[in-house]
Length: 298
Ligand code: UTP
Image 1 (cartoon, rainbow, N blue to C red):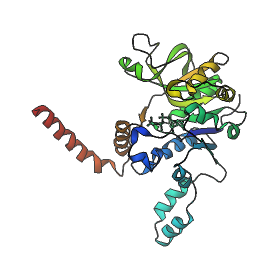
Image 2 (cartoon, rainbow, N blue to C red):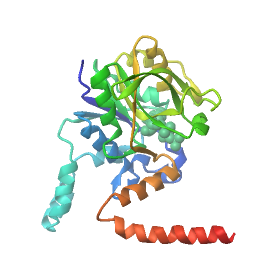
Image 3 (cartoon, helix red, strand yellow):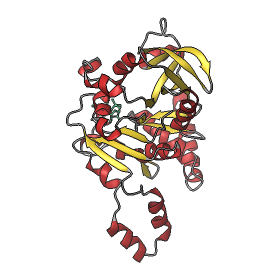
Image 4 (tube, rainbow, N blue to C red):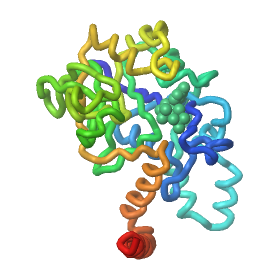
């Protein structure tokens, strides 16, 4: 079985759900507590054993490239100011030289098209895809679970989480086959099914391990929903010839491309940080209590 060494992180989307903030700033640079959303995806990839990150960027996304580059002037200033704690923190986040590649998606033609843009940088080997605005929260990152299942099954692996069975029409839902190792075989993938016909309530939550054969399919994939080249459509075709498995994620994924998911993530990650927790817990608890009093009075 071939090792998964590379992760593709598509960041070329327009982020229209987060306007006006994303008018001049990539949504991936919005911060959760004190680090940008994109840092969480990179940390998760490294934790899962990924050695090389491929960013698929677009226009107006230069701050992402700059963020992952070294900043000698900043380092010098921190050193001169004796801010060794901050310097050590920055050093720890620095990716090794040559461990990052960047390619551009020239127009936002969909997630499938963005992944296809990484074909030459990935080459003929299995690879991971992480949608960075889906931020993984839990004891271990979502991709680590996918890697574990991949080691047991090979093939293609997607990660899933359970949604409210009444809300299947909002998600890509999978059909459940035989239980295998830490996951199960995927029998079908249905885009946004009505709860009355949904094969399960397990939804695809933004992490994939794919075989390189997906690239040829993406290369001739017809435009689908929203006039975009959809990764799910190409996965459907790959499923006709290769197995797909699902790794259930036991943590929680926050959709930080949405305002509510982003705010929830900030609260959850702040509560998980010993240096911030007490500073935010009390005021938030007071705000919640005041809100309850107001709604009870209304
Ligand atoms: P989303 O649909 O969540 O991102 O795509 P978006 O299009 O930026 O969001 P909204 O709906 O307008 O707010 C999921 C992921 O795929 C990337 C996005 O950057 C995001 O990480 N993507 C999407 C691309 O790289 N290229 C595309 O053409 C579309």
